[in-house]
Image (cartoon, rainbow, N blue to C red):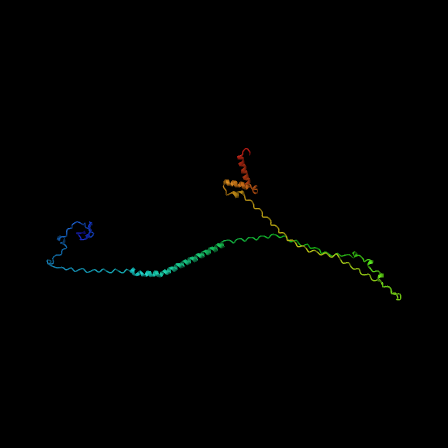
Length: 279
């Protein structure tokens, strides 16, 4: 059964201890207000009043309209301005980015040009001196061989046996009735035929082709000077340097080097210390 607050008349739950309407403790009987409490609030009997006073009801206050917020009206303007300036900002950023790219490209090209100007041109390799070619020997001029003149004394004289006998040349005798003709003069001896020169003039032999001159061998490059042991072993530690110096001085090319003389002297001292009896 719901509990009714005696002060305000609010229904509450059975288990409630306080009124949910006025907060008074439930279960306590609150005395109902009597006429004594109404002395100041109870209106007087109108019949007993000498004068009736009518109180004019107060004029109803009309709440003034809230002033129009200027920002509410001006709000669309910034939106429109920002919407209009958005493309401009975008174009501005694009132009700025393109400008930066152009400046960066120009700077890179300038650096490359400066680097090329700073680098000296590589020296051109010296042309190898051509090996001296031995001059070709002058061809030997052979004296022309004169034909051997056969002296006339060498030609044998024609013997009389080669000439025809006069009797053979004479005509046969005429018959006895005919007068004998006078004997004709003996036929002239035939001219001796010059003997054909069997020994023809020797033909001068053609000069043999000159063999190409052998190339002169280039002089061998001088052997490089041996590196001093101190320069070779200078970067090593104490013990490693001593071993390195001994190994370098053992080479024949460095046997007479002044530094190797000091190394050998040190080796002799160490040998005397190790073997005092044999030293």
